[in-house]
Amino acid sequence: MESVIPRCFISYSWDNEQHRDWVRMLATRLIECGIDAILDQCDCKPGMDLAKFMGRSVKESDYVVLVCTPTFGKKADAGKGGVGYETSIVTGEIFVDEARETKFVPLLREGEAKESLPSYLKSRLFLDFRDDGLFEAKLEELLRHFYGEPLYAKPPIGRKPEWTKPEESPPVKKQTVSKPTKKPPADGPTQKPVIQQTYKNSTGMEFVLIPAGNFKMGSKFSPE
Image (cartoon, rainbow, N blue to C red):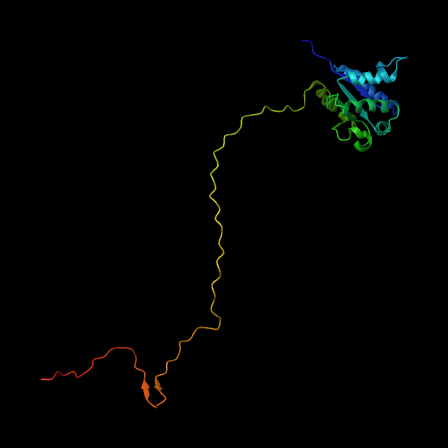
């Protein structure tokens, strides 16, 4: 079975000659790696309708790479020039859900993301191509995205672990609040009451306290 060649349209702003040369180099490297890269510098011919070319290229491509710079971001948000026209086509596909979510790939070339990415791309993940020393590594990330081969493959989902049945917890007993016991007044040790040994009543009779005990009554000698 013949493999399908991914088709990619490159959207960018004509900042200067150096930037246009870099974009053309990117398209060349993609083509060398099996990607049908569509670029106006190579595919637009005299007499062609530029607006129709852009619209057809965005709609018919599998992917759209947007090379973001501060100039690109300003033109896209302001709707100016070719970038502005491409923006209307891209946002039209995004918001009516006619395209896959991963079709539009922001590529940060210059400046910071907050100023270079258009408003409709700020929430999306981008590839950072600002460091030319990392070009080949970033190009591999882009190519892997086109070919559906991520850097790290997700492992297959395994089986559910076997756990022992958890023990039922005993019902929680309601705690009772006990009333505190009354403490004796802190006046020192209690003293025994003093018992009076003799007592005289109102008529003058005197009584004597007899300690508790027992005794024998009568004489100790028996009568003969």
